[in-house]
Amino acid sequence: MTKEKKNKEIIKIILIFALVFILIPLIVFMLVYFTNKDFKKSTNEYLRNTPGIVGEYFSKYPTESEREEKELYLANYYLSIKEESSADKLYIIKKSDEELYNNIIKNMNRKSANKTKDIIILVRNIELRKDLLHTLYDEIKDEEEAELSEEIRRLENLELILAIRDIEILSERTDSKNELRRIFSNINLKTATDMLYYIQPDVYDKIISNIDSNRRKEIESLLLQKDKKFNELYSKAKVYEVMDTERAISELGNTDSYKIDDLSKIYMNLSISKAAEILLGADEDFVNDVISSIEIFEELLGESESRTVKIMQTISFKKQYNQKIDELVVLYEKIEPVEVVKIVEKMIKNKNSVTIFEIDEDTIYTISDSSIILDVLKNMKKQKVSQILSIMDPNDAASITRELAI
Image (cartoon, rainbow, N blue to C red; front, side, top):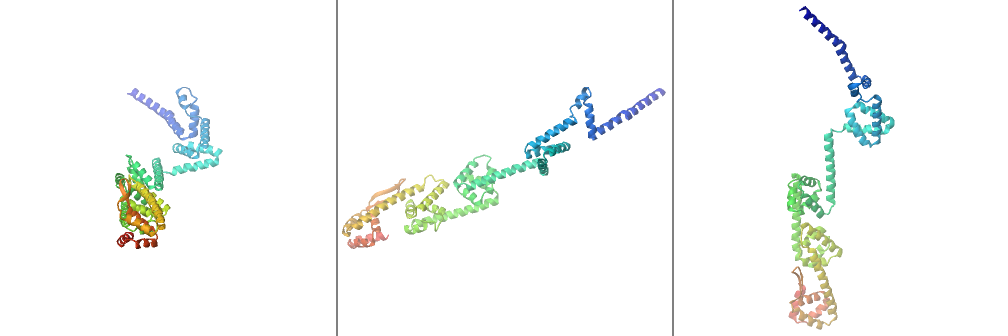
């Protein structure tokens, strides 16, 4: 027992010795190594020169001079690139190694204090920004808003028919639902209403069902107003259809009573012959404006046949006819009344058509001897007409007088 006890005492002494002279110094060494930067650098410098694995391991750590050389290289590099790019890179370094960042900034400051100052400000601005996820999200949203604003401005500046075509093409994309909603939630309310009034029904349904309820109510209210206005103009067209041509010209032959867009809708609902008769008595520039407006309206409605062509053909025919009548008027006013009476009595009885003006198999004008001579008499001087009627058969004179009055 005495020998065993003695062995235990020896082991105890050895352990105490190891603790005091090996473990404690090692702990102190490690503590100083990891807390004292100068000591760590000196130790690394010493250990990198030792042979074997230890030397190989510590040779990976740069010496002080090597570190300073690399820091100087980085400083020169960050000064050579754009300030924004330099700030982005330095911000990343600062987040992971404050000491390295400070050393690089010191080197940069020695070479170019002003540029370094500007870069530091940019780094601080980056630090003040939100975290990267929110920053990227906000940047993308800002870009999307900018693109949306640009697209809306483009659509608002386009001719209505072209804007509608663009929206219809966009609607064909499978992923267009959200983009259409954003456009019609932000575009000018009048522009949105005008487009939806003429757009294809399926596209209309796709858009109107997807926008905010308040916006939808505003648009639907304006659409009802447009419908009401169109019906009012349709009713007025029916009145002008039976109105005396001279009076109709005074109201529809200029923009005193109606805007050009409203006039085009009235003319669209007049017969071809009536529209031509009214425009025949209007200024040429006005006629061109009305025709252009009707063409736009037809395109918006998707009309396959153009009324403007028919109207212009009829105007051309009427001009030629009126020119012939004017020539006959000049001729008949030179002839003795007795001779004119013979011509009138013969022509007034022939009501059979001698000329039929048709467009697409639709009869626009039917001209007979009777209608020709009546148009001649209407345009002759009243004194001459009175002389002619005075020497005619009373019954024939009465009949012609009624026709002229009508």
